[in-house]
Length: 282
Ligand SMILES: O=C(O)CCC(=O)C(=O)O
Image (cartoon, rainbow, N blue to C red; front, side):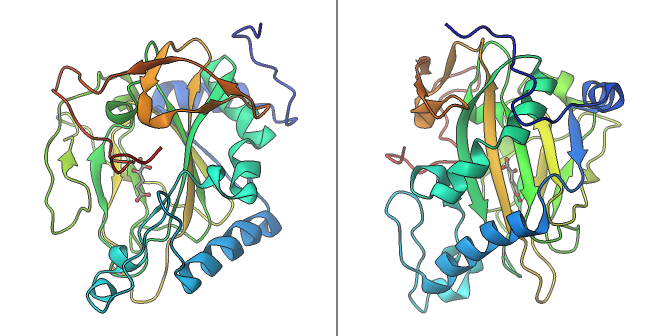
């Protein structure tokens, strides 16, 4: 049996008391240069090649290569889902010991891996309206945590992520409809009065960690020629007993499958589909 107490030395990364206090206050933490340029290059190389070749990976990446698809950057370059299930490089970084140590340090317990994605976000791509991740993951008790690794520079101009500090203390809200002219997802969660989204401007290798209740999202990529590749993973605490079934199988940081109860899709806001999944894709 594995205790909920994390193994703090897996990747040799120890959070400072200031980093922990900043996360507890804001609900997010940026770790600069967590991954080095060679590591970033390895991920970028892999996904630039995938994007260039345009060869579909059923259930993970299904680009529209028709002339129609080429009119919408997100049809030609949709995000890649559950990358660790087909790509050993993605698996390596998904279960990276530094991610382990940081997520464990912020959760104060051993994490479990739930999902990984790559966003290409080419110039002209729509953004993703403000939302809370645990609305989709349904991790309970507790919440999920994201690690968002910048592969390209990520700025407000090229559709970088915005986060609303302090919103990790909120419950998960029922979303409104988003503006489909600027968001490729349909849900919008407005920040509470007085709370404002701030940009998480990142250099390649920087990683943003954030709590599953943090309201966050992105604007369209309004740059002319800057892509905004990112590698995004989600984790949950060992003590969590349930998660949406779309995230099965769950993985420990030792790469072993671990079981938890399946949330069946309903909730206080009704039944909703995951922003991360297409139906039938696991
Ligand atoms: O990277 C983005 O533009 C949005 C990603 C996001 O909101 C998420 O992964 O939950």
